[in-house]
Length: 210
Image 1: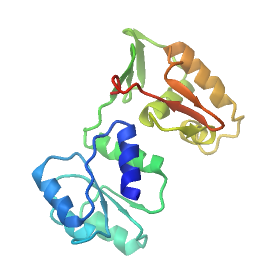
Image 2: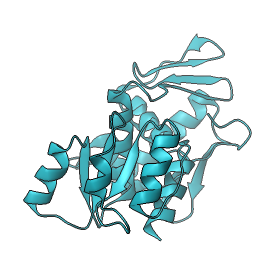
Image 3: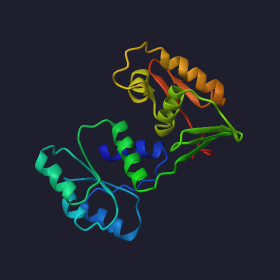
Image 4: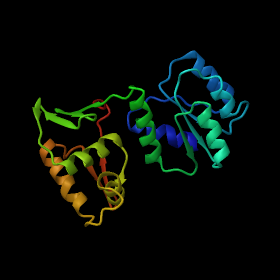
């Protein structure tokens, strides 16, 4: 179930994924094709994640496991893992860590396009039909959060945490105000959906998603 949940969420934000359920199959897939990243559980049938890791050459790995003791973390990192997450975890945190590893490896696409709007996620420059769009710093932060977590429903509280920071003490309704500004400036009313009694979701049409 966790495997399937990870798959669906990573696909929702634009990643192409392959599922496997045991260490031996994972190693076969890794040796047969090129992958940008492996999310690897430590506790696997046939071969442990650590045993699989020992036979991976250059593909970055994020360990995902219920083992949370320091010895396991150190062992995983010494084997060359990029990161180590302990279950239970927040899916948005995993997505963020995946993005960090892919950016570090220069794999992530930093250009996002939707309609006539182009967003450079590295420089946070935004254009509409080739013309620069002036966005306030907080609007840019909110836009980046929506784009990086596209197709995922985000509560107002989560948007505040991600775009304003955990120490923000202002009114939660500021999220609604900034959402309205983004909708207007980018003509994204059809794409920034209101999720009833929760928050918002940047929803991409299947045929235009990038």
